Image (tube, rainbow, N blue to C red; front, side):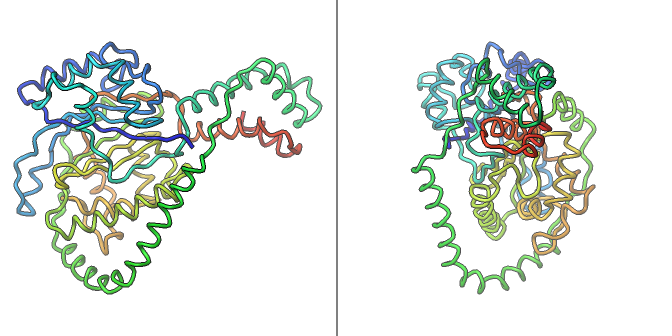
Length: 427
């Protein structure tokens, strides 16, 4: 399985240069928030192995909610964040990034307070990278090239069908004819890279280590659990929920950047509830979520939600704030409904530890089930993404999975007539 990585370069924005930054970023888009893939500052399409990327200004828009917890309502300083999901190692990507878009990146980050042009850009970016506490990939190891190759293969097969179908004696014969046509005329994409022994051992060691750690901790967890639940319920019954509706101006800034294609971006930023209890709860939840995203949710679904390409959770400002970013198919309304109906407990586990979230019971009940309050909370914490890039426009997670099945079926030499008919239905 090819190595995959993330990056998130974050630096504090100079407030006096914000307007100039926004004007520069606007020159890099074809529609509001939608990247021109070949823009002169940051030509995303020339960056090998880049699946998704975005630039977003992290604004602490809901800092006023902190008053209900006796926390300072002074907003955190705004920051520039450039983040994305890539094939290969981050250090190799950074070298390509600087080589292809170094001057443009320097112009962007020159709007930050601590940018120093005397420092090599690759070193500056690396020093400002923030690791996600949890990262999710719809299908780890599936590369940008594989996605494009399999889409091209299916398109070619569809174009061959009108000539080959009348000549075929059966579905199995049609499969054979199409396979021969591809072998003779193409496209013949290389086989996806297999998982190396080293990667298998690394994954197995990670899984075993976490299982052993959980077993060792289980006696302590059983002792602590009753006290944890008592404290949790006391806090849940007194924690404030902020049920305010997002302003029309804020909604407009979000909606104008959505639904240009089948996939959308989501960026959100909020404050973690004060105190060690909530922070440690959140850290434990993220530990469990991290193990499941690495070893359980690796074949197209996060819980029962299959529309997410990539997602990440990131602590900022010494764990005071939490950033969540995702790339998902469909509208935001459908995305929220999907989670509310299929994985509300997961939303509650994480986001109930943030200021203003609808009240939960025992961490997993209620909360997001108050659908209107939850949707207000989500929209109020959502940030307008200034620039968003996708390497394979028009393809959903379902399309990508179907194209992979088409390729696998074409590579199969032993196939029954029934399986051939099933494979043809994917075209």
